[in-house]
Length: 52
Image (cartoon, rainbow, N blue to C red; front, side, top):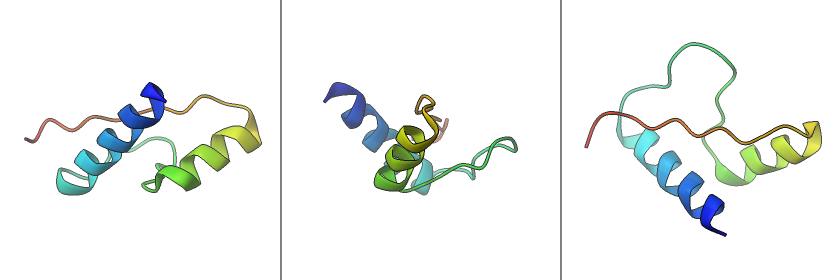
């Protein structure tokens, strides 16, 4: 539950801030990111922006 909250906050901050850095294909919707992580059996990474 705490992880889900952290992911939700991170995604909300990413929408308001800068675009994500180049690298893996970033997903902006929590449900889509969770489904993708479960489908491919990989962790869910969170990107925090530096804008406030």
